[in-house]
Structures are given as structure tokens and as C-alpha cells.
Image 1 (tube, helix red, strand yellow):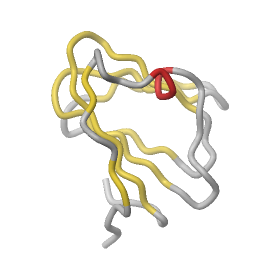
Image 2 (cartoon, one colour):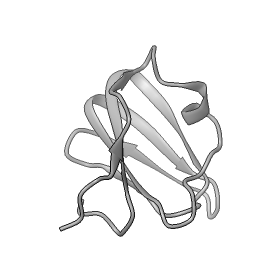
Image 3 (cartoon, helix red, strand yellow):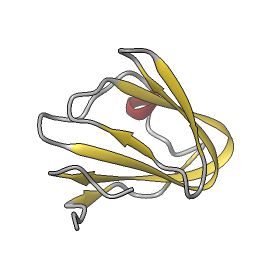
Image 4 (tube, one colour):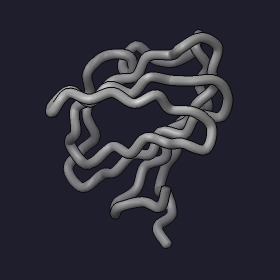
Length: 89
């Protein structure tokens, strides 16, 4: 089973970096899994456009080079894990 090679710190609605709140993407060959620990977070995929509300136990998958951004929906805590192959959800 795939293991993350890196994880971000745990962010809340106040410490979530602007870079994650604005359009960005992972590098070629890098998968991301956004895991919400508490609260809710809106994940927006830019192309094709779609949105998903992430909650604890319902993570968001980011494919390599997929443009996306996140928006806190009130108080929340979240973390991103990074993988070099498709991760388990």
C-alpha cells in the first residue's frame, strides 16, 4: 500500500496558507490527499469544474498537475498528504 512521502502541517481556518486558497497544482507524478480532521472544507477542481465538500472520513483526491483550490467552511482543521503513486483513500 502506498505511503505518503510528505505531509503538510495541520492547518486551521486561520493558518491555511493563501497558496492553498488560490489556484495551484501538484507537480507531475505527485498525488495529493486532502484530509479534513474537523469541520468542513470546500475543494474546487478548476478544469473540468467541480466542487466537493470534504469532511472527516471523506478526503479529497488531487491527481498530478490537477488545478484546484480549497475554501474553509467555518472552523476546520486539515492536512495534505503527498504520494508518488495513486494513494489509498
